[in-house]
Image 1 (tube, one colour):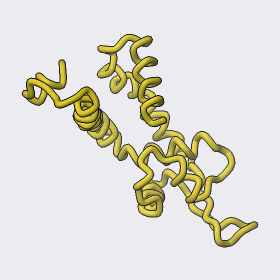
Image 2 (cartoon, rainbow, N blue to C red; image 1 turned 90 degrees about the horizontal axis):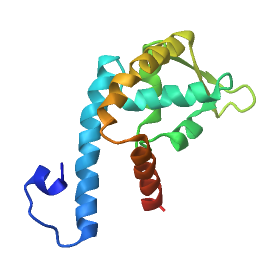
Image 3 (cartoon, rainbow, N blue to C red; image 1 turned 180 degrees about the vertical axis):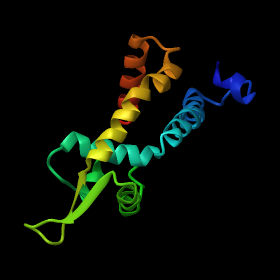
Image 4 (cartoon, rainbow, N blue to C red; image 1 turned 30 degrees about the vertical axis):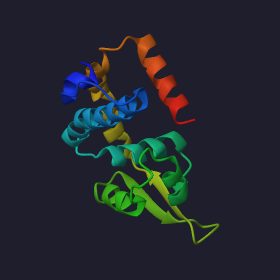
Length: 149
């Protein structure tokens, strides 16, 4: 559906304003798809992001700063996220032996199992985006990359 129809606005002052409104509206729509998906699995999007970062570096530990730099939402409180993931038994946190100022985070077996559970359910989430063909999805992603410069 066109953004004009979604927000009941007949026109925009220019195409860039239309783009901005469309991006903001679409961001909210995506969040409405993603947030309940992760909530049903006992996670937040940010917690899943941290678990995915840790899985990608396994078996090496990852320090807080690297996690922060690789987050999708870089405004996230990494300390709080790690604390929640420790409470759930998905990660461990240790002081680095070589540099006691650094904290190393590792994925636990329980964390791996949680990610496998998420991976099994991902097709349900991705099905909500299949109103785009694969080629259109690649194009949209490339255009977003280009937009960010």
